[in-house]
Structure formats: C-alpha cells, structure tokens
Image (cartoon, rainbow, N blue to C red; front, side, top):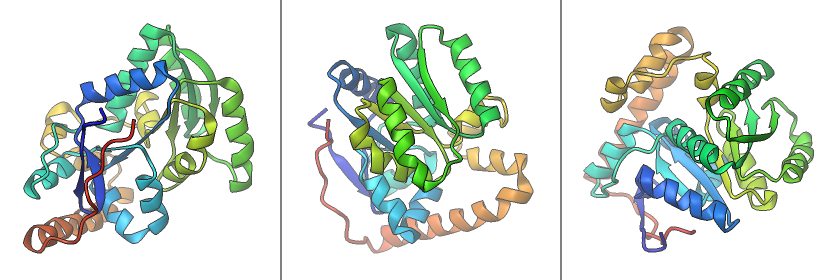
Length: 258
C-alpha cells in the first residue's frame, strides 16, 4: 500500500483505496500489530472541517481518509482526482466484523447509549459468533473520563476498536488516544451502531448509489435534520464549484502511511 497516493480534495487528502484494498490493509495491520487510524469524510464533514479547526486537525491526524459519501466521490472526479469507489464507514465496519468472525479477532465497541450498545453487542454476538467482544462502553462521558476509558481499552487488548460518537467527538478521541491504545484498527463509525441496533434504517442501495442517503435520513427525521442538510449540502456544492472554477491551494499528495 506504500505506493498509493493521497489525493487532495477540498482540503482533505483522500486515499484512493477500494474496499478490497482497505480489508487487505486492515488484515495486514492486525497481523503485524501495527496501527491504522481510519477516518471517513462525507459532504457534511468536509464542510464542517472548513468551519471547525479541531475537527479538521483530528481528521488529518488519521492514517487513512476514505470517501464515505457518493457526493465526495463525484466531487473528487470532477476535480480531477479519481477515486475507485465509495468506502462507507458502516460498510467497512460490517466487513471488518466478517474478517474478525473468520479470524477470531478481538473487538471493543465505544459509543452510543447503553440501550443501543446492548443491542449492538447482541447483534454482533448473533451474526458474528467468531468475534471476541472484549469490551463495550457508551459514548456519554466527561472529557476528564477519557484517560480512564483509554486505559480500560488498553487492558482488553482489542484488535479492532469501533468508535460510534457524533463528530467531532469521535475524531478527537481517535486522534488523541489512538496512538497510545495499542489497537491495530481504530475506526470511527458514527451512527452505524444505531443502524445495527435497528434504531434507524439505512437507505436502500439504489438511494445510496444515487447519492441520496442523506435524503433518506431526512425523511426519517425531517424536523431535526432538514435544516442541517439544506445548509451543509448548499455549502458543499459551493465549495465544489469554487474549487472547479478557481482551484484553491491544495496540500501536496503524500504516500499512504501503513
């Protein structure tokens, strides 16, 4: 993977990796007990990275940054940086669980409410019996509790850590503690726990392929989400048009760290 090139798109150096590439990289990382901090970005996160320096710094501190949304893949291609495919965070989580099921890897789940977390651990145990669930902790804690939570994760020696909290909290936790945990794969999965637990529904594949997963979410929670997506989608389109018409200075491509 050292030959892969990071491609700068709207201020984020994205890795041109397919799902197959990522699974190979993750398996190698676990086998050699190296470290891979995984970051994913969609249109909303790219917008918020422009407005929140702490979020931007946390995302840029990860070892791999993937295009989580089709809008990001299309924007990258429009701007001359072709990405092989979308690698959604929840899909990567599912594939990593399949890998862990086959290999007997150890998994720790951090995030969501106690109710959702209990449902997620039940689902993992039922669907992936080969997975060793070595720990779980809800995502509602005070900043001063982070060190104790990190210490607990270290003692369980997981191969994979899933962090399901809202941005920028999950990105900051991974950036702050990931290098010290000794966990090969640290993956921020956002709302994936809610989907696995059955609390929310994921968009059908047709909607996903059309880049309308955001609209499906809005239809489920219109009162809470319509304004957020109206603002971020509008700003994202503006960012893409600006970059297309008058390219902004971009960081130089860097080799993927492995």
